[in-house]
Each structure stands twice: as C-alpha cells, then as structure tokens.
Image 1 (tube, rainbow, N blue to C red):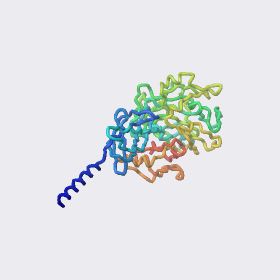
Image 2 (image 1 turned 180 degrees about the vertical axis):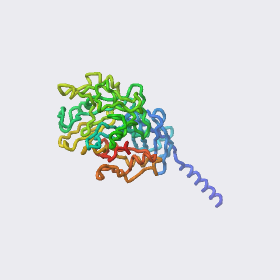
Image 3 (image 1 turned 90 degrees about the vertical axis):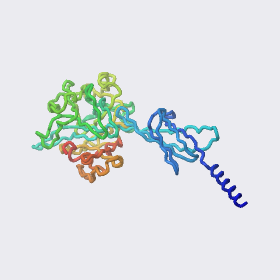
Image 4 (image 1 turned 30 degrees about the horizontal axis):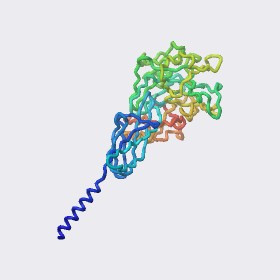
Length: 436
C-alpha cells in the first residue's frame, strides 16, 4: 500500500512539473521612426532579461519575432546608415512586458522607436594654412593644404563633395549680416554665405575614400615646396589640387603648375563669383567647409537666385549654401582681433573656434582622437601609440594622449573627435603630418 501511494505521489509530482513548463509566447518587434514602421533589413535587435540575451535580424519590413516565456524584457537596436556622406546613427530601446493573453491570442507587436543623430563620415582632419619661414626669415604661405578623412567604418563616395569658405575671410572686413540675440541672420534663413568660389571634383572622376582613410587637397601649389623652402611641405604627392586658371583664379604665386605626379583629372574646378585672382584661404580667419550638394553644383553657382550680394561689387557676393549641405567646418580666428569675434557658422555646424596665434611657424591644425571609439576598434590593441607629444603647446594638446600618425603607421585605425566644436576637436600640431 505504501508503495502504491508513493507511486501516486510521484505521478502527481510529474503532473505538477508538466503544468509548470513555461508558456512560450511569440513576440514581434517592429522598428519605428516618427511613429511609423521603419523598413530596414538586417538590423540586429536584442531582447534581454535577467536570464536571457537573444538576438535576431530584421526582415525587409524591419521586423523580428522572438519566442520567449512570460517575463520582463528590454528590446534594443543600434546601427549606422550612411547616405551621401552623412552618417546617421540610429538607437532605440523599449520595455517589453510579455504576458500570456490566453489560448488563441496573439501578442501585439512591440514598437521599437528609434532616434537618429547625424554625423558626417567626411571630416576635416588637418588644416595647414599658416605657412613657414624661409631661410631669410620671411613668411612663405603658398603651401597650404587640407586633409579630408573618412571617420567611419564604411567606404564613402566623395565624388560630389565640394570645398567652400564661409564669410568673412578678412578680420579687417565688416560683417555684413545682422546678429540678433547671438543668432546671425542667415542662420535663421537656413544657409551659410560662401566667399569667392566653390571647388568641386571634375565630372566623371570617382572619389571613393576607404574606411579610416584620407585624401590630401593642395590649396596652393601641388609641388615639392621643400626643394626651395626646407621648412615647408612636399605637396607633389597631393591627391587633388585647386587648379583652374580659366576660372579667373590664376595668380602665379598661388597656382604654379602642379607636379606631374598629380593627374590632370585631379585638378579641382570652380567658378569665380568673388573678387581677385586667388581663392582666399586666409591664415588667421579661415572658415573651411566641406559640403555635399543635393543638386549639380555647376547649376547651383550659375543661378543668380542662389547668391546674396551685400556690397557694390563682387567683394561681398556670397553663395547661399544650404546648412543641410555642410558636412563639416571649422572656425579659425586671429588672436589680435579676437575681441571682434562672432560666430560665422550656425551652431548646428560648429559651436566653437580656435585662434591662430602665430603664422610662419610651420604648425597645423590637427583633429583630436576619439579615445574610446578608437580603442574599441577590433584589431587596434597593440597598435596604438600613446604619450603623444606632437602638439605645439603642451598645455593645449590632444587630450586622448594617442599619437594618431604613429598609430596609423603601426597599422591602427583612428576615429577622430567630432563634437561640432572646433575648440574641443582640434589642437595646434608642431609639425604638419605630411612633413612627419
């Protein structure tokens, strides 16, 4: 009898155990933007709880389905998407309380709302525009260059990218635009005035920049300047050069014939709509801008409606570049005229500035390293070089402590800081990177 009762107890225990098997619920998760479904295929969605960590990739409609027991979960997704040189960073999380709605019921789709933040794949990595001293101690500054860098892990097509210069480029000039409560009038209208001319790559020239790679654009003289001026830089290996004598920008000192090592189809083109025989890239008040037009740039500069002339001649004739076109920009001011400073770039583009304290020193403006992002790149361990000491001023150096150029030479991939604040993102480098 005891054996029989024991067997009944075991059967009852098994029955209770079966009753406690977890009920599995199918939980659909739908990516969403602005309250609407967001159809992006291949995005990894994670569903986590105290005891689970599940992953699945979205289908063509932006949806995934998990099969899980009842409980509290968190759904999350984070991914990047590059479009026309702009990198959009998507992030989202959602709390998911999975409950049993009863036999035959379907668990409603969870909306995983995403927010998008914009950052440019293409950034200004370095600007060399202060010149150097020749053997006689005189200033030589026809050796300027700018380095454009792909600050992302995906290739970018820069074929439509242009180089422009915002007003005003001379600190002795008077600002033509009204500032009200700290906001300059063209910011309210959604554009930035570009001076003198806008430079673009020739039609049919494909400009693809690999992840964590760069192109060098010679502003003046794609030649080996060190042959005559040892303190200068060698620009004979520049990837591209501003050289369009037919435009009206033909000053011989600014535009000597490029070295034979620069292909002729790598000469950038422009239309002169300002004044003078040289495109102004000043040493103490430069505002370089990388722009990506959403229309043909030649048609844009050919349309008078796209200009704002604030003077009696073309000295104050500015192209009205839409703010949405600007990929990256930086403000450089003169220390001597710092009291005259006003922000020329709208805050959405840049929130700070640097001061060119001295010219003729052979220094350059170099972008700081994003330490956390750089150290997080797989394969960088053991290749990053620390204890950076290349700044012109030890008190105003790269706060990351990473020697970017030495690390690149060692095979590392570098992510540079991009906070939309020139003051935080750049430091004065003692020796231009091209000079090593």
